[in-house]
Amino acid sequence: MALHELTARRAPAAERWWLWPLALWAVSRLVSTALLVAFSWNQGESSWTPERPDILDYSTMWDAHWYFIVSQVGYPAELPIADDGHAGENAWAFMPVYPLLARVLMVLGLPWEGAAVLLSVLASLAFALVAYRLFQDIAPGRERFALALVLLSPTAPVLQLGYAESLFLLLLAGALLAWRHRRWEWLVVLLPILSLTRPGGLAFAFALALWWLVRWRREGPGFAVAERWRIIGIGAWSALWGFAWLLVCTLVTGSLSSYFETELSWRSAYIGRQELIPFTPWPIGLEWWFGPWWPLWMLGIVAAAVALLAGPWARGVALEARLWTIAYLVYLAAVWFPQSSTWRLLMPIFPAAAIVAAARPAWARALVLAVAIALQPVWIWFCWHVNPPDWTVP
Image 1 (cartoon, rainbow, N blue to C red):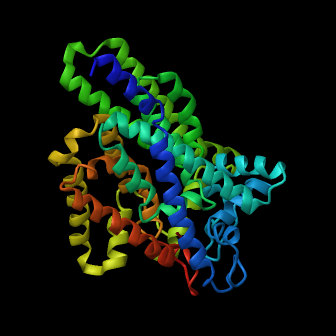
Image 2 (cartoon, one colour):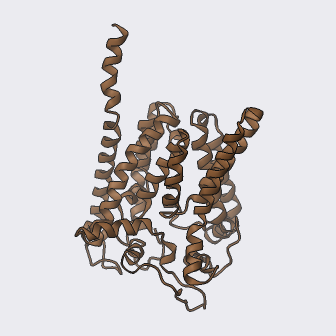
Image 3 (tube, helix red, strand yellow):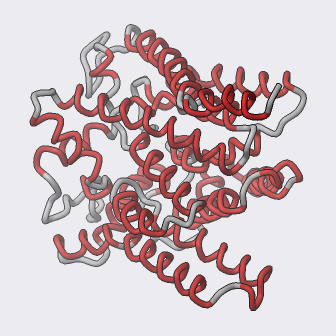
């Protein structure tokens, strides 16, 4: 067969690259929707819904209510004070992009529940398309399994709930793809929106700093001065927006500690009121969960992360994706208190799915995917379904 004939046959397939991510997205949403509907039929009356709520009500419980508050009345100028004299839970913990976009849909006539779910579903579809292109770029040949693993992961139902995860992952996938293709102008646009959707600007700045150091060590004088300063500039831009919401909260409330007090109010149900000292929440949290065995759990978590990111199977994944994963995990280690939301907070390391996609033989990948799907109802039951008394916010 002539080369031009072979090329002509391949071209249409390349032009229809979107068929695979679209198909994977559709299958994944059917799975998650079926599970959510089944659980909604067995949901008792709760603070958020009546008994056996419809799928829209069931999909907008928990923190979705805070996004609803933001979409309607914005943020408080004065923080509520809890019984312990400290700031109580309030809307400042929830960034504005997602609820404001949902409010736009409400202006078009949709109720909050429909607007929130529709926004998440549309963002998840766009994320599937952009993430597929990203996987093609960072790990060619692994993109189908990697995307399937992300869309069918244990926490995948959240991609269609009234949470900002779908939108954040879409923006993150776009930012990572822009980074890979050195489209700095796109990063200038995406990083502010990303940082005001969910926390991520500081982690992205740290990833760029790690990349700068790696390139400086590898390339030496070949690392062009102009390129060095360009990366420093983008990193500073990302860091600035990483602090932007804290500054907005400070300006509105008049207190520099207001944002930290707000965030700390959520973990006080577990360990009482404590100061935020970087890299201490995980030892404190693991000790709360597992008692004297916490060092073993800490060692196991660190060992698993190192094995995933430093093993030979990771070498087939682009450096930028690995550095982002490292940076985001370090960010979580610095500020996050481990609790039931941790599984959802791990979703931004989705590029690591390309590392798991290196598993061989084929049955091993099939087993991983089957376990991921089987854990979806487990996540729904323990982290979303309301089982009174329930204080484990998903």
